[in-house]
Image (cartoon, rainbow, N blue to C red; front, side, top):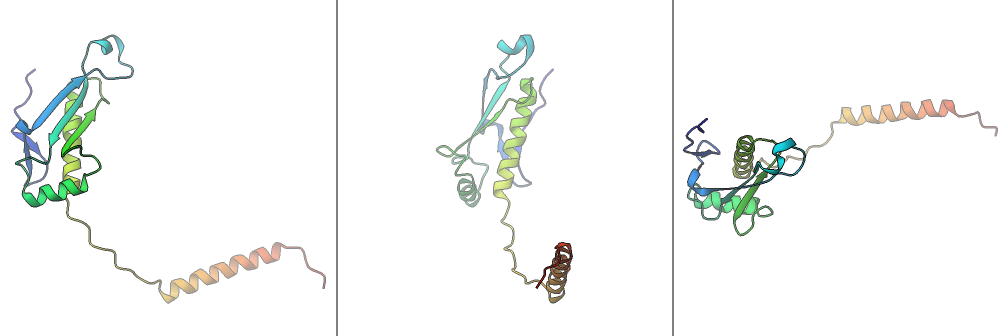
Length: 146
């Protein structure tokens, strides 16, 4: 079965990583797998050099390198997939994981949280429920002799 032609890895509506920038490495996967476990190279490593990618603008590259700095080694991002027994499914999983990771890193930051104060009614409800709980526990105590 021939693999479908893929012009590149679509990350967002504006960013598509060309296939020529993606490097694949295959090795034997660990864990159970039956008779083919010692012969099938089903573990997949997808390597993408984000620092020199032509798919990103200068601003996008700067943001990506900053946000993924903990995962990058010399500007290179490596994704490993070995959860499936078939190499093709692991390849698809690695592609999806890379696309999701890059899309998340390129997403604009969420707006800052506006601090709010509790309303007067919520304060009163909280205090009355605390007082009700205190009264219940007071009634459970044995009577004190003074």
